[in-house]
Image (cartoon, rainbow, N blue to C red):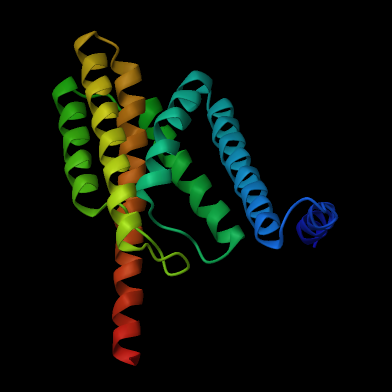
Length: 199
């Protein structure tokens, strides 16, 4: 209810702007809602990191995860509460990996390369609320692959420089996005199959 009131108040302010067309007002409102969602995601991630004693790791995680998430896409819960629950669970699990995962650099590199291959194959992943056009698939897929490739190279460089902690954070962010992409891909395929059976 409070959220609806806030959105309504924002809508009222935007609607009073005489210098914006109706289409521009919709775009501004959408941008504001997306910005709020992004800030909430960053705040929740850093708060979980802070509570787990992983402040700098949580900041690096956000820097690596969000650009991938933006272009690779992935799982989206049906409700905001479901989204929050899923996000907190996945982030906490990723941070447990960051805090307690100790293995050979070769395994960290191997996991990242497998993640890169999976993301290369399935990205971008739309969802039933936001199906991607062919043009968007090409554009977002290219950007996701470039970001994933650059992050993988940086992560490998961190391993070579002996910065294992940074490499594990980057690998965890990468693996978290790949998990989201796989779950989103499965959910989207199920949705498409149901739609085909009905049609």
